[in-house]
Length: 165
Picture 1 (cartoon, rainbow, N blue to C red):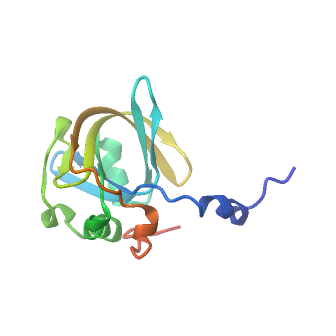
Picture 2 (picture 1 turned 180 degrees about the vertical axis):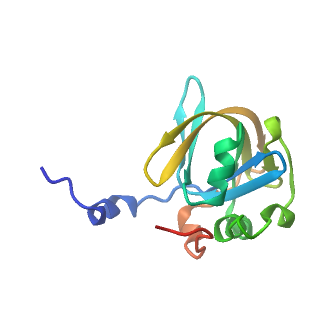
């Protein structure tokens, strides 16, 4: 049985338009963060959320050692913040020097002024190929005004700050 090709999968995948989020990680004094398009609630009881980080992304190495990650939802008017975390790499740019942030539970880095955010304890890592899923147990929450969220289509003009295989 032929299950198709990657091109065939694009017919399905290209119709998706997920919410984008910024994931931040911190270990000691090292901070990192990236724009993420692969994320979802993955359990109801207990509540769990998964974010998928590219293995070639600077944030991935920091996140692997971090006990907590912070996940931030953005609005379309925060495109510049998305471009900073999606179009620059922590290998050469201190993204946190260019934005407002505060400390969260477990030493997590919480970006201020985002639409909503949570800090989650890393419960598991799931290898999915070129990305690794971080399964998070929410431990701290915050929310701003309820507005439309930034989606993948809103970020078409952002070129990834890390190499794409």
